[in-house]
Length: 270
Image (cartoon, rainbow, N blue to C red; front, top):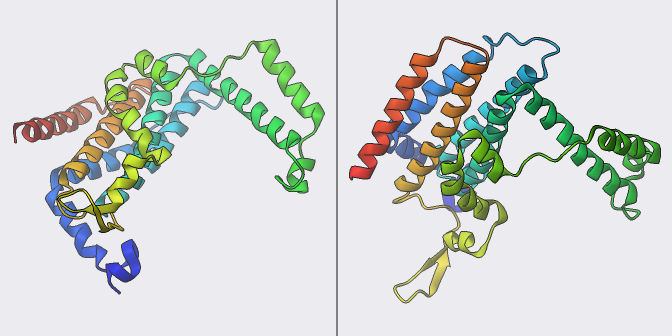
């Protein structure tokens, strides 16, 4: 069936995917090599059982790799809007990975801060009107559990995790945060500017029809932007893991970084 009938699930998408991969070969080639490196690292990590920093960093990195793979798949099929939504998630995960890798105390703080979020959720479920949550769910949460968790949080003086903006400054990722994060928010929150991508207009600015799938033609710049930001973040995350676990992959990462920088230079010269 055609794209008109099945959208992105159509077999016609196979040809479009081939075109996108061909036109942006260098970005996707770096991505595939970086992906192999990232997944190979999983088996090189010497994680000590009681080390909160190592455990947290390793699990965050595995989660990063999943997002990385998802962005690759979406971008290769021209699903730029959804790829950007995941790109924001990738940025947030990278900020947290960098943060917990800075000090052991940061890793502990990361987990304790999540307890504050859990307390909010438990309170919401416990205090919700009947019918919002099933009785089975509500019955598992007791007032005693909530009080004990609150007492523990108060006793230990748990503070919330710094905002993403503060984390970006702390971890040296302020530039990409300033350049990308606020733009990516528009994809997550689906503002009016975003949905404009899904209509076609004439020379007078009048809507002529729905653009019911993202732009397949002339979308190279969007593909390049998503892939560059994704590669930059996954390289940053991989460098962080290599440093934390003292692995011997520095030269390979440096080589991939230089290739990416060369692509950016060529793009700016065009």
